[in-house]
Image 1 (cartoon, rainbow, N blue to C red):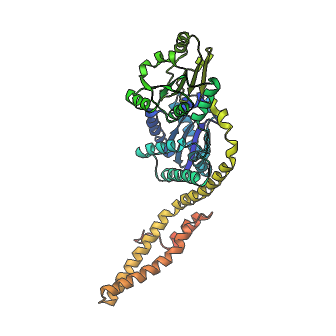
Image 2 (image 1 turned 180 degrees about the horizontal axis):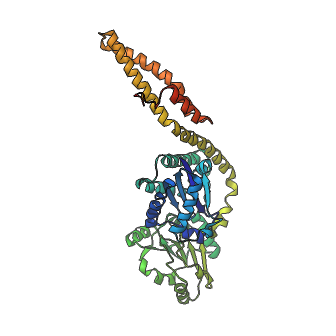
Length: 424
């Protein structure tokens, strides 16, 4: 069974493409079920964030599975497969394992070293695991990826002073407004990055905070944290007349603020500047709003420039992280290769145990009256001999060698494993 990664991210596809392939709550469950119906896919997990949509799967034939997944994504999201050319990537085996480890360790993130991706990957894994969608190989791969990410954070300084998306959003805000103290701010939604942005804004002087959430009670909770006030979702557009800065991060599948809404709002504001950052994927703010005078709308891709300025100083730590990942890839591949030998190892041990028990019984019958202490001593000695005899072939079966298939066949023949002689 082999590992395959299929996906696209912020480096291969702009936000307008990524948002069309995003999986939301109900879509995530339906997508997972659809993948598992593909004959080529034996187990799968979907990771869908603002910067990437990826499928991690174990498959029997990577080429056939890749073609099936591309067709699946096209059909599931009603997108012409041709429009995905140049955006989708496919990684198999070693390259797939490397990619998963790099994603978990945030080496493939827009913000190298950011912590959010590991939490997102854990959530995606737990979701797939709870639906029985993963299997032995993916379970081991994802658990290993999580431990690799922790090792990278422990043994390198990759996470120190990482410029986050939320930090970049605030830096962009400061370029529009020199003084933030008298500005009114609205948080639309309750995404983790948006909440971090609010905290950065408050540190930079913002005092007037309004929180809008589809679940009003959650909005009230957050508003208390920020010493602000909560507004019901259905009333947020009316509030925008008095709002200078908006950060949007909701789970809505389409636009919640349109150009016509904003034109009306700007008339009420007498064209005073409004700064909007939409870090939702799919985007929740109509991009045509950017055509309105004094409205400054940015999406998650627009923050890349600020993030890039922080990357240069982190290259050495990234190189150390890459070395850790290469080391862990070898460990995982060794384990994966050993899976081919597991049935033979189990049968070899069973065969040895059968022979041991049969010979012990024969010996005890010959010896006649043997007390319990003597019996235990005999059993211990025979077990030690058997274990020493099967240890070398067991070790050989676990090794990663080119002639593995020939070795398995030879050991099965030498030890009579699988023959029709009453043994297994």
